[in-house]
Amino acid sequence: MSGLSRGLSRRLVLGSAVALAACEGRAKSQPALAPPLLKSLKDSATFPVGTCVQVSHLDQPLWVQLARAQCSQLTPEWEMKMEYILQPDGTYRFDRPDRIAAFAKANGQRLYCTTLVWYAQKPDAFVKLDESRVNFASAFDNYITTVVGRYRGQAVGWDVVNEAVAEDGEGWRQSLWADKLGDFDHMRRAFDLAKAADPHAVLFINDYNLESLPKKFDTFQRLVERLLKAGAPVGGLGCQSHLAADLPGGAMTRTLQALARFGLPIHVSELDVSLSRVERRFAPRAELERGQAALYTETAEAFAGLPEAQRFALTLWGLRDKDSWLRGENAADAPAPFNDDGWPKDAAHALSDGLSAGLYGNAKPRR
Ligand code: XIL
Image (cartoon, rainbow, N blue to C red; front, side, top):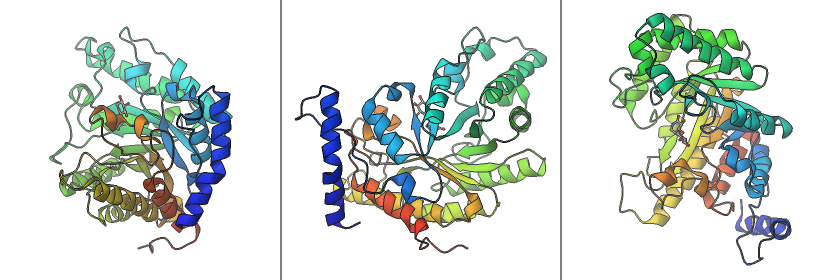
């Protein structure tokens, strides 16, 4: 996008920004709301573009406007995980996930759901079950059946197994689920149960650092092969894509092309580009920001270059910097395409350019 058209798009949206800020009783001198890009992300792409969302966002008019303008899909960031749904006494609560699902429906956005089996979650309700494998298994089965069943007909997909591969790529992770139900069997079981509960949702296995740790990527691919060989209804592959701004160019493209060899739909499921989680800690900020923009373009373009049936969606793990989970790790990080006020950063324009590459047919050639 030229500097002129960017300037124009910013000016074009400023009027509505000020108007809405005034409606909210904000002083004009305060940062105004999120201006949509001249061409929104969702309109730039030939596939769904999503973001994660928390219920608290739904009460923020600026976030709502930004998400409606830019995104065609929503993933609850944490309120559809066990950490929210499953209470210590074993009962379930669905108020917040239901609210997100209703918001998506009201706005014509697809609902993507995460996550059913995750080593990182060790809920009291399961920990305190007695040693009987039967009790544990029936609680596990009931959780998956109930939660997946609740969003049947609306959910387009589920992360069934999240982050199963060990950090160093040496086999699979230990977890409560692996301990009680078997390191392979608990995954197989989760896929079967999810399939029975919602035959139309695409069921994903999802992991991170696939683009930066070759051994981990290799183990991930072997696991997918094994699940498929065992007949598990794995319907898609999730590449979280929590990238560092100094990730060398080409890695994301190679990773998505290698994943495409399975022939399954692919979800870039949690894209962000950290300025803090970098190896080159003393690199100038401006240089890292250029790296960030380039990675947003490369990821979108490589995704747009996949065969059409395999482009499930590209999801951002936070629209604005201040929404990002990485802020909790480093308050100076700015990993999202939009700044704290919702204005598009260079990263947003870069992302839009990468997405448009697919629209105009000049995305990277297919293999
Ligand atoms: C994170 C969310 O961003 C946080 O809000 C939540 O408290 C913990 O989970 N990989 C994943 C995501 O699969 O589910 C994580 O999301 C980020 C890393």
